[in-house]
Length: 362
Image (cartoon, rainbow, N blue to C red; front, top):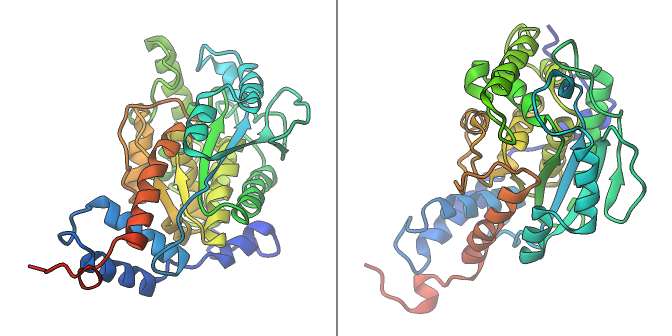
């Protein structure tokens, strides 16, 4: 087994792993102390105090910069496992939804417009050719994965290059935005997500596999069987970065790979990355497998009704900010959590302390 903590030396992936450092403990301590001096009972903002502290540790300063304007990167790709009948939706819907994103007609566009966030679409593996368009980044590795039910979804080299596509996008977007948000699009991608959750957490296929876009009982049973068949090829839970990449190549999707890289790139750039649903959660497991400190830069926007998502968040030690029974993807749930994250940062920055406000403490 390759036990090298960074077996990807000389690549963008390797350089990015080397660039990720733990959050700043001194800035977090300063945030805790300021929160306790603010004109409110200590701890009264609950989880938002943890968010404010995390943001300070990410930035290395107290208070942290406000996480706005945020940008959503919707990574789009297709999946060979679609051939197994794991979803009733035709594969061409992936490319059609990319066009919808670019035209501003999807839910992610509506939510982003409400919050003043930008939407960028990244093609890392849509099966159909896409015409160039404003807001579309061409980072295509291959036109969809191979069928993960029958063999590896992609080669190790393809998996690494897809991860690096996500790193490059995060690095680029982080120069202009203080908060990155994960988005995704890919018909059949919840099958790959369930397989990744099983591979990285040891969960049973029946526990990690959900109905995705709302499949019926026979389709769900077929989906569980496909996930079980795929995961059986992974000998054990990945314990090294090399094993994490191998598991990703075996059962993941191109957008999962790019999202894992997106998390790594955000961490290397020291900006928070707000995770969406089941696809992002499974990709974050890969990111943590490649570079454990990277997950310190992630916040979980919500918990999806897709069962594998809660398993992924529990494994990662991430507490979701919202629970709205969402199952759309695109970045929608993460966007809805953005005001909570921004409010936590603004409170840490703007709220007076007892001393400065002349308010008597108890």
